[in-house]
Image (cartoon, rainbow, N blue to C red; front, side, top):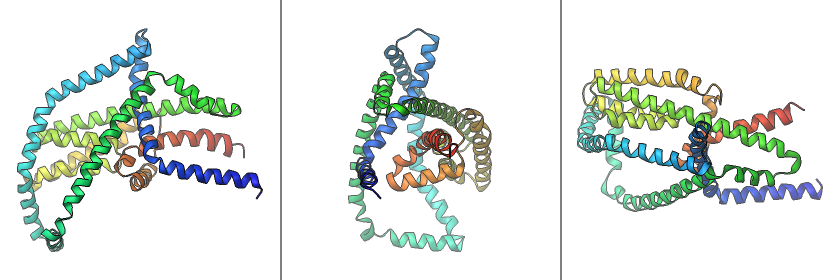
Length: 332
């Protein structure tokens, strides 16, 4: 190994350590890129219809989103608040129902005793400091979210200047490849975001209608949770099903079966029919790749890593296809 190779490896190690120390900054930056692409999709569509400058089109889109969110909040927020209060009233009843059910099953009964033993006062006292740490983490996450939104607006306001900056930092020989990469990553990420938004909205509406037809308590709150967790494929829909199942248990065991059938039908329809149609022209992520990316980034970065795992895999898949497959493996 000559000195030049050793110096290059050392530079890579140093660069990796710096990236790890700045991982939260890079996470906020990537999140801002995802939000900027999400804003750029309607901005581009609006500019195709009307001869508007990008700042004016972005202002119209942001104002439209704020107005839409305000109106939806005015319609749904009172019901959500009422259902959240109803959930606090129903939670003790649900715990009693689960406790009664656990006494009838020996395995669950032993688990209940272990939980009761663990939940002693001496062992619950450290929760106070943990709650304070959670509050500090929530405040930090709020600041990071605000910075992410601000960066996203700045990126969406003038994407070409940032693209030229990336191209200027690329060696001249590889600038055409980098330009193709940026274009393909933007198209894939924009298509994925648009497809997942339509898919999540459909899951929310159909789940709400189905739970309301079955007369399950807290139908709106359960449907909203199911719709939001659609953005976390593989893990999200399974976790989201727990809330409507718990609410159905308050009615009857037969209602639990009905809700389970409803959620399985909607989840399979979304996963195997709606999402493949919406994403047929953009990305085709394997479930194993999606799950492993969520597990890895979740272990490294927590909940933000889980939320940004899928957009990251979409971008990495485009890079792997253009660089690893077409530029390296095909020429080998």
